[in-house]
Image (cartoon, rainbow over all chains, first blue to last red; front, side, top):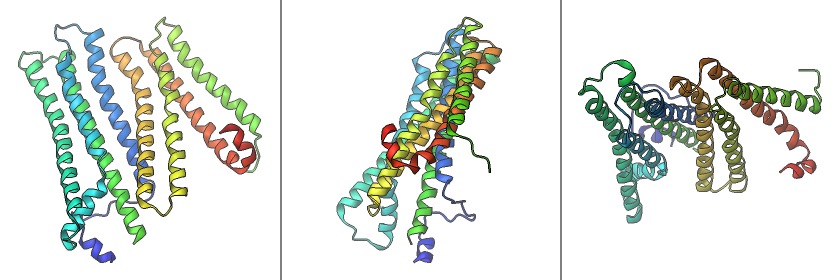
Length: 182
Length: 147
């Protein structure tokens, strides 16, 4: 059974992911730290534009949109029950008659997951678009002014990293409990 | 550790430690007549709350629904949310004075004082729950008073 599960996994990873018991907790803590870092790096640009800005470029609602997209995408991606997806990965292989409702549910889960990842990627690319259109094209390339746009991109990158770490942490713990029950 | 410290000594020293943290943060506000770093106290006081709430909840879930795997998973998710909120709040408590310093709302001395004060407050709360968690679990008769 164990070797069968080993051959049935989705990716062939040449190295073992370290899976001791505390790795899930540690990963979730680190993911929260990265999310807060992204939030505050972005909020830094907003507060800088309000209080210490010497130029005539200001952060408006346009700059908030990529951040809101990234946050919404992260919320959607990480609130999906991952056992639905994983069950169907196994069900497609050797249990073909798993029922109609299960496959419909997994299809919904996949499409919602796709929306979540699209929102995350859209947030990151949107922040890059804001940086280019609002700052780089209009020749605001000296640092304290262009820092507002760069902080926006950095904040979205941090939120993406946080989402990736949270996903990996939860999946690693799933593998651990899997091998524990078998 | 052979010598035994009485709980009263622990409480007194920890409360002194906590008061030192509050003193540092309030001094960082009052010396420069700029009361933005007070939000740091609020964040660091909120930081241990989600962890404690969701940790207890997951304990209940694993003890009463030991056989039911689905409920066990949902308890795990709830404790994950608690860990996530704790990490987020601690990091935002650390970065809030840095952001205020970068936006020239407070100066560097006030930034350093409020960061160290907030760290002292948070670590004293964590050490408090760490010291007294085991001793409260030992005698359940007194435990009912506090919970």
